[in-house]
Amino acid sequence: MKLNKGYFVTATDTGIGKTYVSAFLYKAVKKYEGAYYKPVQSGCIEKNGRLTASDIDFVCSFNNEEYDISKGTYFLKEEVSPHLAAEIENIEINFEKIKKYWENLKIKYKTIIVEGAGGVYVPLVRNKYFIFNLIKDLNIPVILVCSTKVGAVNHALLTINFLKNTGIKIHGIVFNRVSENIKNFEKDNIEIILKTGEIKKYLIIKENQKNISEDEILKFLEEDNE
Image 1 (tube, rainbow, N blue to C red):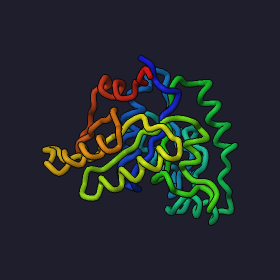
Image 2 (cartoon, one colour):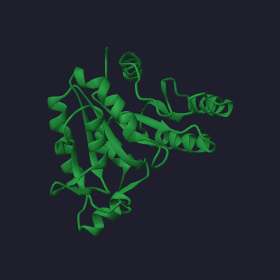
Image 3 (cartoon, helix red, strand yellow):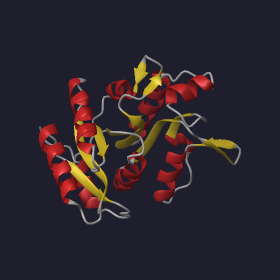
Image 4 (tube, rainbow, N blue to C red):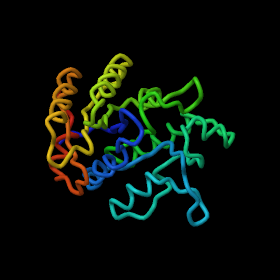
């Protein structure tokens, strides 16, 4: 089984389920010396005298782990776009700091699930540095989390085309919160997104699904021999 050194989990919008998907992916790679990393989290809350990142907290809880502050780099209070949250606290998000964390993780672990913030064009530094810049700098492929609701095709294909035009490799798509009894329009949305976007690898997570077989996830994550 050949896995990438890292996968960057991003989405077509905020609230699509990146953290939920990341928790499943991390669960599958943990026993293969895998790690989870959230470089930037806004909307952190005070808990036990320190800022706690809700996404890291969820992923740790999902995997029966204690909260681990080392899974993140920037912890910001305001629940707004990271660039604005950082400005409010007079902080500038610095890629070199993230890179240092990233390089250490690469030494310790064989594969790393990296979770972004929002979608690919979310700014980390106003008018200068965006999520897609971070993906390019880390030089890892994307796992794109998509909805299957009405409007999903437009959001997905715009994101796919942007990533391709920016030179970012898309490893595959995770369709999240698909109806338990999948509806015809959802099937059609999935088919159009995969065919038009020329995406081969995909995973479907149903609404309220609590378990996915490890083999299914690892097969999805496995690198193609190209």
